[in-house]
Image (cartoon, rainbow, N blue to C red; front, side, top):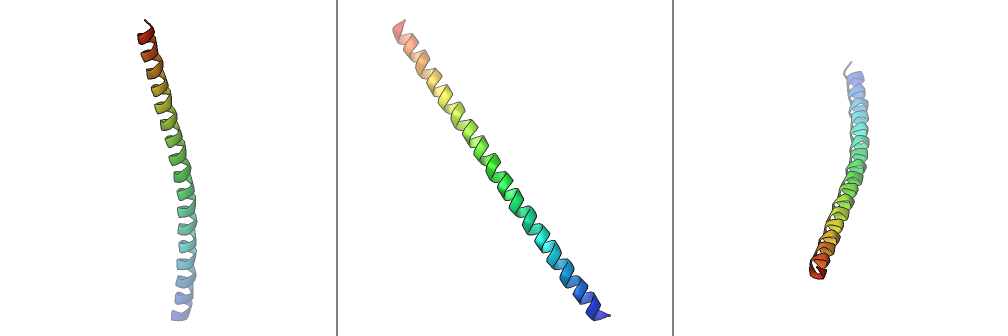
Length: 63
């Protein structure tokens, strides 16, 4: 009785551990890609704003 319970518990805990590890890996990948995409978007926004600011300054100087 106890032996069957312990074998069941051992396999159950290992399976849940594997599932948790797999979900953690996929979540880490997903978070990394969202981090990359948001940073790229922020950088592009910052660059475009800087570029627009430079253009406006040039227009002011020319006027």
